[in-house]
Image 1 (tube, one colour):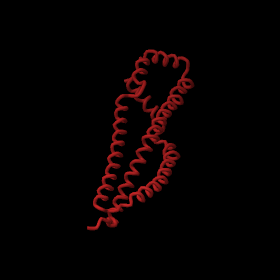
Image 2 (cartoon, one colour):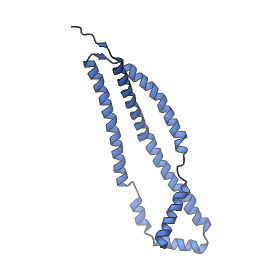
Image 3 (cartoon, rainbow, N blue to C red):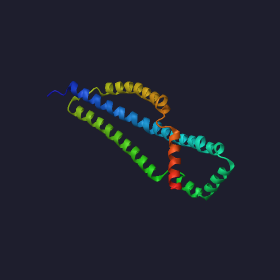
Image 4 (cartoon, rainbow, N blue to C red):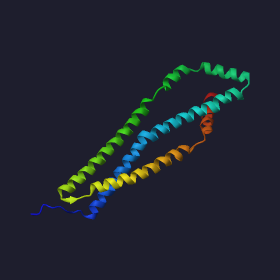
Length: 185
């Protein structure tokens, strides 16, 4: 009996290459999301809310009201439980943290499962005496995804982060209209 392995069928190599390609893509997108996008989007949202407050509400208070109106606003604000509200909203909300932790856990589990499947496919092919050029497949995918990863990062950094999906003034306008409805009805 001959112990030499046969050349792998091109369909097996092609399928393995596609699967490794998908694993690389999912892993790179996951890492980009975990270490860059999630942090940058959180920071951008926080900055946007702070800017809206400073530029719209506080400036409006300083420039748009006469002294009697300012005194009325101060009186209303003094009557609000601002310390209680501040304590309630300070820090990270537990539900948000739990949700985001589960999202990250799911990402980690998927990456681990995908990598285990790649290893199993390679081992099974070796046991079945199929010669998969796994080193060539890995090198090709590393080269491809280095370029793709750079393009995606640059696209995100220079285009997506500069996109404004909603006018900041709309949020303030909506908030003020809801306050008017609740307080004046």
